[in-house]
Image: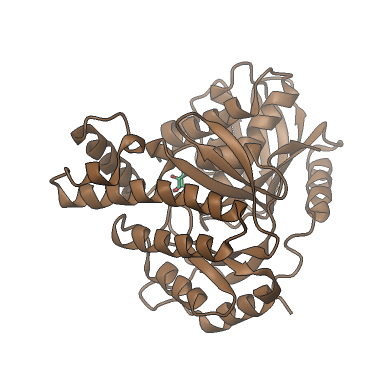
Length: 385
Ligand code: GLA
């Protein structure tokens, strides 16, 4: 029996709870309800801000916002589990602290935004590298769009979400999370070329399940390490006199004299190649090949890019020793949070039980939340219900 049965079922209960929450706090039914999923990245890590390739899927976990227009530029937000946030769109988002800043940032950057009252719930684990913040940004962007009847596209909302991270949160993140939350389609992985912003929908072989392995460890992405990695990549590109590492080959990298930059760049260049090879392997039904590339990606992130951590390394090791596992790797920004595996569908239940029973966080990195191992199906991106 899977421990977390039901995570793939539609979130009707959550939607009803959010609508009822709005009604009881604001005294009337909401005008609109928006849902936005989190994401897990299958492969293509730390490539987005290098103009490279990424391959995420949207998750069955969602942020749901029930909202109605307010009279002025005031925003009043109540969250199911995280208190409330109140601010005026005329104020600077930097004056709003906590999660309210994501919504405030979206409103301040979307031209024509109007005020609203909202009740927010989320089933996306926070700090697990599953994009709870991007989901909040994109959901909020949709609320501003629909309540203000604004002519803004999902891609534009995604780009504004990235600007919120960069300008108001202080993380120089790429565009993957926001595009995954905004544009994913049910049953498909989303291949994004971060240079051209072109997207393609990729089928995952029928016999293959995606499994999230949340170690329960947590780390703030804002941490300076993320921004440092991005700076290293920019320096490497500058040294090679190219616009970004997207244009580098493995031979080019040998010209770098700084050993740290060389390793960082080698990860990016090899990871881009792996994304395209995984797409090829998925399209020809070779999940074992795709799995091998997942495992290579983990080693590259651990050894060359140095963004893994003791708990992520251990859960990947346990996964790789479990029957049915095609491959496993850390996912998202890294250091803590979740890893992802691809597993033979007919062995997925045993796989989840085995990893759950055999993984324990190393003493050097204790868990702050329960370890959870569960299969997920690819879900649809943001929508107005
Ligand atoms: C975080 C960022 C993304 C991406 C990943 C690493 O999730 O928000 O833009 O850089 O880390 O692949």
